[in-house]
Image 1 (cartoon, one colour):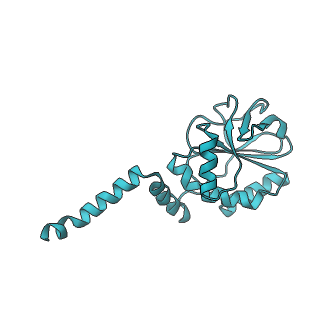
Image 2 (spheres, helix red, strand yellow):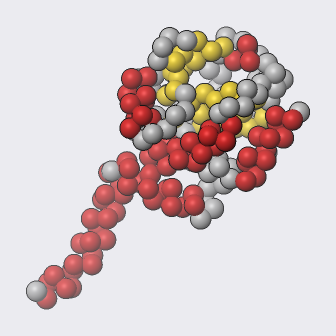
Image 3 (cartoon, rainbow, N blue to C red):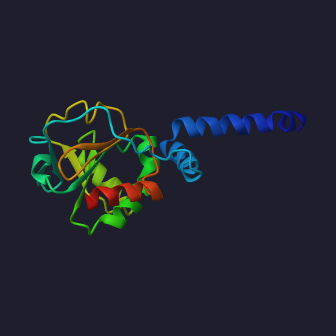
Length: 189
């Protein structure tokens, strides 16, 4: 009994650390908590890199419909690269779902949630299981490194003229008031 009292707290702490390290949903839960206290707000600044042409950058949905970014001039384009196995991606999904709900009926903004693994069946099931209604796509062409270099999650936004207006690698709270105002500003331009 003395050993349990002496080492019980250490064992509990060690077990908690192992759960956070090896259970993606536990790690996502921890990150989501840090997001809620404001630790992961996206910095809204003009990216240094630019993309000259969006033509030919394509995404495909589960029904086989293909979207070419070059055909979306006149619309704000929000692209989020993610994967079902990625804890930071899982952590930011609730904020992305809230952002999407605010703008889903706005025909001036196109949302593309691109499963970086390209497994549309798995990613669609993941979204459905969590009651997220966001449109899931897979990358259907080469994507320039200025847009996506492989880090997950990565979010990019293009203005109505097709210019790269925002790029962020890593988890962020996209339902933040400043970020919503940023999207509204891009819509108004």
